[in-house]
Image 1 (cartoon, rainbow, N blue to C red):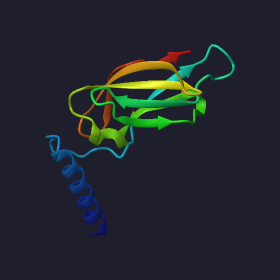
Image 2 (cartoon, rainbow, N blue to C red):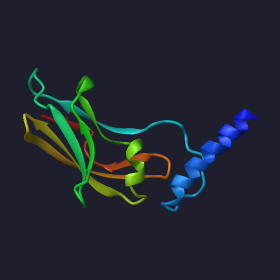
Image 3 (cartoon, rainbow, N blue to C red):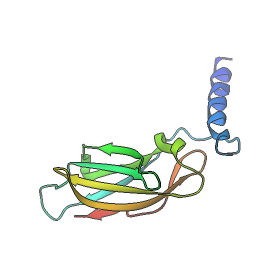
Length: 127
């Protein structure tokens, strides 16, 4: 009985957040998706100390990172899904070193009511 109550509670929460965007009722996986970009450096010393991702149409800051484990960063992840639409929107990821912009890349990203989806954009940035 306890499992049924937990399952129904999860379904209600999932369906209520999807109603805002005209999503059909569906069971989503518990997988947490991220759009990750690899950074390849031409030198042995990484020249990036932070990245930021902005939504292009209103310049809303979506993600900020200062830790580059294994030379990659997250552009957006499922935590940002409520700020996305079913139609692709443009996001700009920028990399900085000591406050100076080092790169700027555009990504088209949407969601499918369960997870975010990258429509276009680089998988690797060479610096």
